Amino acid sequence: MEYTDAPSTESQAGGANTMPCPSCGTLLPKGAQKCNRCDWTRADTETAEGKASDAVAVLLSIIPGLGHIYKGHKLAGLLWMAGAIPAGIFVLLAAFASAGFGVGLFFIYLIGVMLHAYAIDDWAVPVKDDEGEQY
Ligand SMILES: [Zn+2]
Image (spheres, protein in one colour):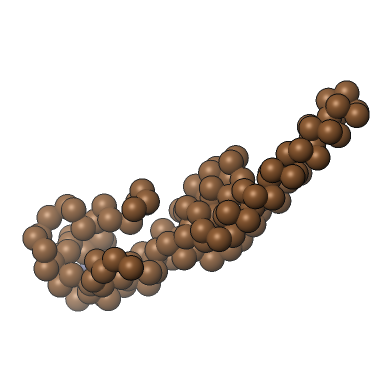
């Protein structure tokens, strides 16, 4: 399991078959798609969480690939991580050749990773919807 901010609403109250409305706190059936007291819908919450995780993904991209894995793109994350190794070697060689200046090239790689981590869709949130089924 990974640590995400998704399950926090489930652990608050209400037992196994209910969940509080994230907006007004009304107890709703677990997995409810919308609230019948306010205009909360599940889709709204998911887009909000997706936005929040964009920022986290960018921060995690300090380690190339980690932001992608956070968003659920494990394969893309591994590819970015794998790409960081030859990129790192190349940057080291460039740094030796240019007396340290080449280290800046790695930041270009990092910026590329961060932009990509920010831009890709969030896969981590929508998957776990109703039942807590493990794959
Ligand atoms: Zn509500």
